[in-house]
Structures are given as C-alpha cells and as structure tokens.
Image 1: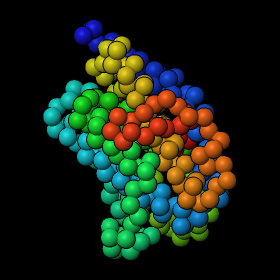
Image 2: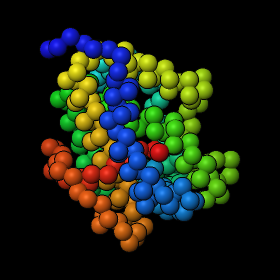
Image 3: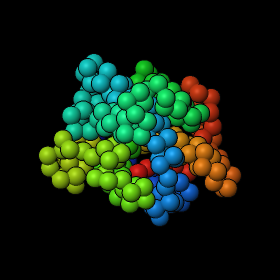
Length: 251
C-alpha cells in the first residue's frame, strides 16, 4: 500500500463530482421542487425513502466507527449529523403515530441504494465516507433551500414536517461545520488509490440518489421520467440494477 497522502480528499471529492452536481440541477423532481412544485403526497414518500437510506447509512457508519475504522472514525459525527430521529419525527407528522406500519415500502431504486450501503459496509467500510459526504453536506447546503420551498409550497405551519433539514445539534454555523468537515476529509488516512475509489463511490452515491428521485418522478407521473437521461454502465453488484449517468445531491 502506498504511503498516505493527506491534504486533498475534500478537493478531489468536490472536483470529481462536479459533473454529477451540475446534472442534478436539471433533474425534473429537483427543478420542480425548487420552483415550489411539490405536493405533500410525493414529499412524504420522499421522506420515507430517505428514512430507509439513512437507517442503513447510519447503521453502517456506527459499525465502522465501533470497529475503529481509521478513515471513518474522524469523520463520524453522529450527534451533529444523524438524520434518522428527524426523519422519524417527520414521518409521524405525515402518517401518524403508526407510521412504521403504514409507510410505503422501498421503491426499486431505494432498495438498490440500501443494498449498496450494506455491501460497502461489509466489504470496504472506508468508502462509507463518500456516501456520508454526498448526503450530509448536501443536506447542510442545498437541503436548506429545499426546506424553505417545502414550507412555502405545502403551507407547513412552523416548519412542521421538515425536521429532516434541521441540524439543531450543530452549535456552530453550517458553514463553519462544513469547513471543519472538509478539513477532516483532508486529514483522512487515505492514499491515492483509496482517494480514487472514494471519488468513484461518491459518484455511485449520486447515481443512487438520482435513481431514487427518478422513482419519485414516476410516482408523480412526470412525462420525462426515466426517458430523458442517458444510461450509465454502472451495475450494482448486490441489486443487479443499472443506474443512469446523471446524479443527485441536495443541490
């Protein structure tokens, strides 16, 4: 194994996913969301799918941290970042106290996403950092814009139903926390080969998120859903699903 080369993982992740980030801006679900075209029926299904994703992501991150994974441990911030309790709060708002019994099951894309996280957690847990980077930094950035649009579009009094976007346990500003997270990425014990794998996995994470939102487009009957995007050659080992080449992050 080559000596660890510290200092550039945050930059490499940002530069290596720029095309994916740009593509996300044209995803029908996202563009409509950003124009205030979001209904509670679809939004609450999105919350369900994200619950399944974060349930697996946070389980795998905790396992990796508990096993003292040298890459995951310095980048594991369960108190500040974990979304599962907030998602559960939102699901109770939308579905009632028995939300676990009545929430919809995983869509095919969500099932594939969960399978990928389980696979990575079992075979190469350091790469969970790529998934954490993609989701959490997106939630702290564009996710805050989506929250405002959700509140306005669905007339949510006092922001009820959008706890997912609240990071109340981050004591600093979001910007300060993200800057600190990026410094932790740059200090990660990864060599050039591992960095390359990390960037590749971050792009896989974009693909998985994109597929999840395409499922939501199909649910709402979007005419372009699944037909306007070129297909990628990536095939998930666990789910056997082929994902499209454009990706999503919380803008």
